[in-house]
Image (cartoon, rainbow, N blue to C red; front, side):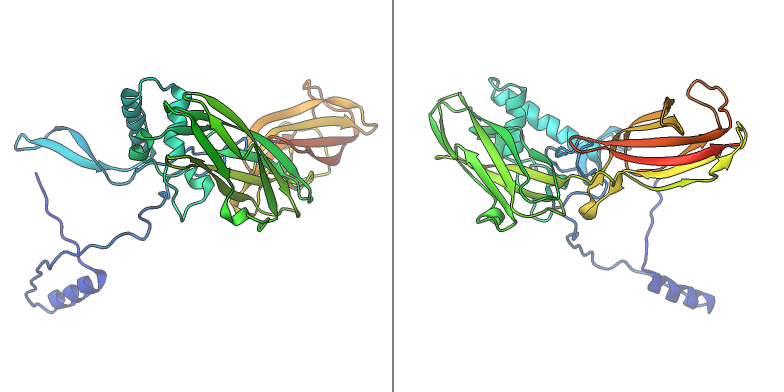
Length: 372
């Protein structure tokens, strides 16, 4: 059974209610349809996850259409015709990418998996309003991919976490592959925003120009140096221009390494002096990890809670957690040691240690307490 539904604006509905309340006959006619382009069209959907990945690398690799896609629907309509519907979601976008990769593999069977990934990402079209962390290499463009001659691996570059001191530097390796049957001269260029050190960053390619034999590879080292202390994450793109062929882009990202004291904060112990109790433990709560400026997440790769005596002697590990996103955590202290034995009356210390992902120093905090 089909039930037709007509919606009217709230102001019109209120007026209709008034007329009906006065006993008048009300007629509603449907006017001419109008349409407008959504302001969010052409951007990454709100339900799509943004990067970075937990280890600080750029994710996603690229994006694909995933809103309002027309597709076949199971079963048949009442008149026996095929059914169709529209779907939205990241699973639909993944199917678009998988199908595009299958078409590319069918048309160019000599390509291996890394080559397929390199061509799909390198030929993607950049979305001007989106960040590298949201779109990766950009929007899938299967037409440009099918004609691609050069790919770069990795498809996106993460220079890791920069320190807050000037002079920080990093080096990454970029592998260029030539899939054509001709010798190619390839040039590499930085983001126009970084020419002349405009963002206090200096990039260098070694070499900045290479010649790649047919079906050959070349290695380029990319170095970056900070001319001033960095406060917020910085992103951009490198342009790779093969002679007589379409240019490809490699997005890059630099995040900022947290200070050693930034992964643990707001530490609270409900009672500094308590008796051992399994039913009413003292509660240790704290913030692990943080959300930095620009939305950058600083997760914790390993959190360790150690128990020590007043003399500093280790009494074992009370808790150990891995891969924590920023958030607030709580532990109950029952007055027992790591083996489950009741602690003798006296003074003790809890040592909290949070280790960052990637490089960087751990954060530590000491919480003293007394067992009565």
